[in-house]
Amino acid sequence: MAQGGLSEDEQRAIREHIERLRQEHRDLDVAIEALMASGAADRLQLQRLKKRKLALRDRLKRLEDELTPDIIA
Image (cartoon, rainbow, N blue to C red; front, side, top):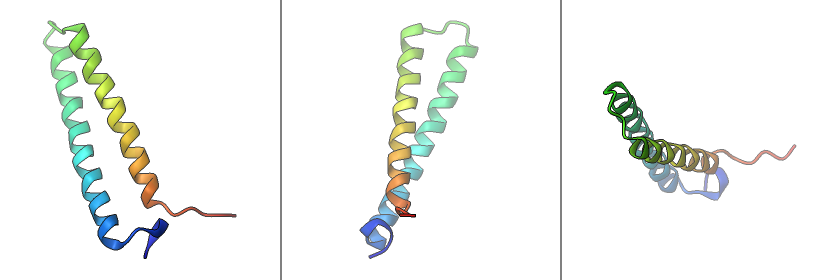
């Protein structure tokens, strides 16, 4: 067992999932910028994309925390 009681396979799976979520986060960034640059930004669609991006960021943070060992000082 490695960090946080996770096996190396579990850690690898989490890292792969994190990378997929990071890519989705970057893709949302591009979509938001394109929508805003078009000038015809649908406010509701823009709001939904931003909300999804924030949810991804929160999920990424939780997954990254799973990989970080607890340090008791």
